[in-house]
Length: 107
Length: 118
Image (tube, rainbow over all chains, first blue to last red; front, side, top):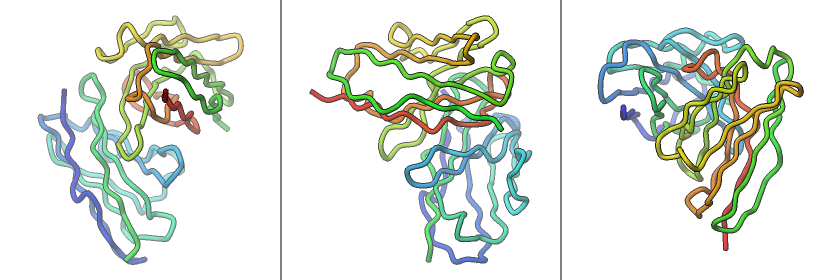
């Protein structure tokens, strides 16, 4: 199975900050990477697939990049509604696997 | 708009079975794979497998083979996931999700909490 490692596991940031989350795959996955946002007590929300393609309705403050084994999710200007946990997920091969998540908290 | 509405929370004893349903609307049910995932408290999501609603084909993660059954009823645009021989390790929120295909997850149901306790 492909292991996905996210860093940091949590971070504190202020409204307006630029935030970057990193995800590393245990082997090359081309650009077969997705990102999800999850707020407490809610279902995850799909944000990005193909490492950088935003799903419909996802604001442009979110961006993704990377290929191979190293990927990033960037939130350009953090807003109160962005405080949540973010997960990466590979879909290069089965089983689909997720990172452990990065919790973005208010400083 | 696309909706995936799951059945309500369930409580089961070890050894029992549970079935979670996922009623869909707002899109053509047979055009999109349905992936099932679960999330234990404090953990990231865990993918369980998918069903192709068009023909009923399924792909299950090895650890769930023999214990999970995924079915669908195209007449009511609803998918089902049955998990048997429950243990406390199966306590989690279970999600149905609409796939772009058999790889990419687009939208999630609201989740169904399954609690397993003696």
